[in-house]
Length: 432
Image 1 (tube, rainbow, N blue to C red):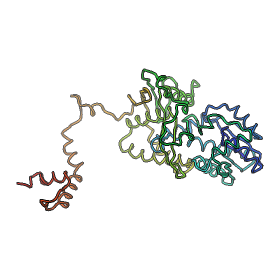
Image 2: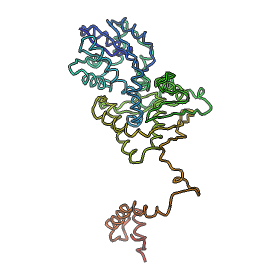
Image 3: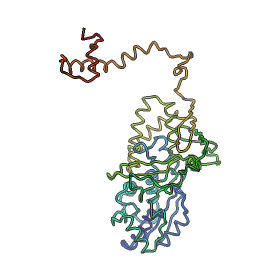
């Protein structure tokens, strides 16, 4: 019987091929989905067949990934725990869906992946696969056999499975939207990552440009349509993928895009995670600033709550949860006027938005200016301030009286209340 295995060409999935053969007796059909990881896909196919795969599928899903997964993430300002732009989390449901498609084509309902029992990916693969093929059987050899990374490497060595030097040191997952680096020295939360862990972001101070760089990003209905001169306008000159790749290269060259934080995994483990995401960080920051320009404060506050929930759903493997689709509909409604241009300045690892403009801008310079051209009537503010702070003022007055109704010579009230008692609750001194 055949099993469809999500195959990346890395250590976990390569070991999985052999285990599925030896332990379970399956004919393994490997499926590699290109989501912009930049690997040699032909070499991956050849490696799978050398290990023992009876058939291999290579699926180019880069444009689909960018259009149907990355673009919604940008509109949602998708950042798990405020930092991680969900690169791996976004790609997993897409990969899982392609494996299900191949399984149907091959006439099998047995699916497999190379996830461990400690990570988030097992949740993302399992839930998506079961949602799309409820009758399926899922096998995860690394998880099921409780294999640790050193055991995997030793097994690969005995079986003659090639293991790259990088894989021996780190566990890497990469796609168009980001690069995740785990394991090895990075498991020590108090240790700075070595420079050789990074591929996309320039971390050598000597190689960083001496001059600041500027990235001009144009948005239409919440999604980027041009970055500098690279336009994804459907006229054949460039694609969404090329636009994001350009942003990754340019921001990375200026040292922008490293994320290093303690992350809460779905399985309850706190893990030290290091990512490279130059395009994701710069584009999302630009998008957030454009939203501030065109959305009301009420829209922004509520959307921030939605964004947090959206990011949690995606991170925790619930891409196909109906609530995620519901949230997308709300988010899409907020993006109707999120069109305009944003300029990001990058210098030696730092970046910030320095300019933004939109036809739908709610920023009124006449109201905001402090110069003589101001159209804001300041005299109206006094009554507003009185009403705005009314309950806070009353609460402090009442509680000051209740805490110290009759201050004794030996009492030592908080300095704030001491001052209030000295002045009297109505501004009249209580000492004469």
